[in-house]
Length: 160
Image (cartoon, rainbow, N blue to C red; front, side, top):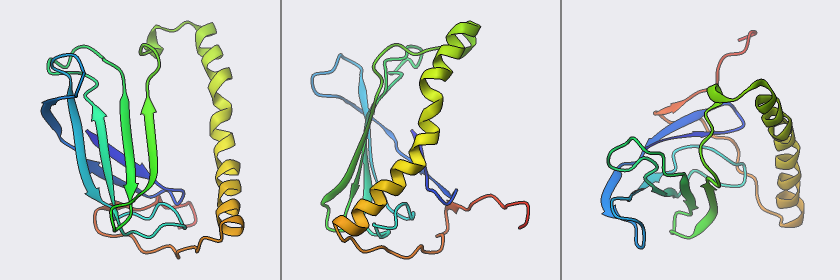
């Protein structure tokens, strides 16, 4: 599995996590896990340093024959340099996959109506949470560090 981590500075870092061969506990036969640990070489939040690592646990969405979609279930944990979990994010599919090429015009418009606001709502929510972390919880902010080798820098602006 290839993970692409992005930050608000339009920078990216790619991580590769390999598929295991052992089945998930209690899962149907043949459903393997994708599990891995990667050092945190990437500046994601002004409230976290680059120390620590990511751990990733995912069920294999395609299975050994790679021709049947079985759903998405991915958990990514940001661990401190001492191994304590600092942030846990989980993505789980709740229904069957949707093929956008098979949708009619009304279905596409319904989808856009339900989901287009999400992108506009993200930045104000991030700013609000940053203010809470800074003033209510009095967390220190870390200055943005230079990119390390292996990270993909932001795209140049028209002025640059």
